[in-house]
Image 1 (cartoon, helix red, strand yellow):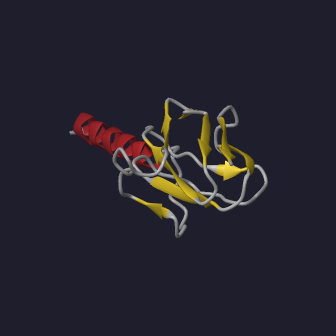
Image 2: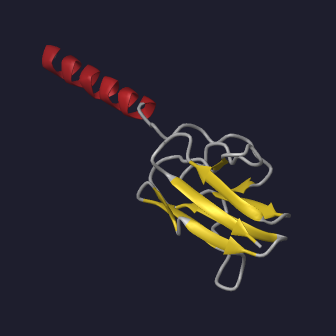
Length: 124
């Protein structure tokens, strides 16, 4: 009986620790974040977030265009613009973030959770 009780205790603790160890964070509320997949071909330009990278890392669009980022990774990421103009908050796996670029310029962005992740959007 003592072995069964010990085994049950270890199982419960293991399950509790696994539930608490998700490093993905929680999705921050943001009006431009949704759980829908990115637009199909012919829609707005898309950037995939996969394998701890933005792909493509560089995107070019015309002023007034919308770009959609889709988190296809297994953990949360952010799309945070270096100039502070936009921030997705934490994007859970499967989430998307849209941003419309009104003016021309080059807009650098990064993931605040994973400092090696960088990208740019060039707007003409």
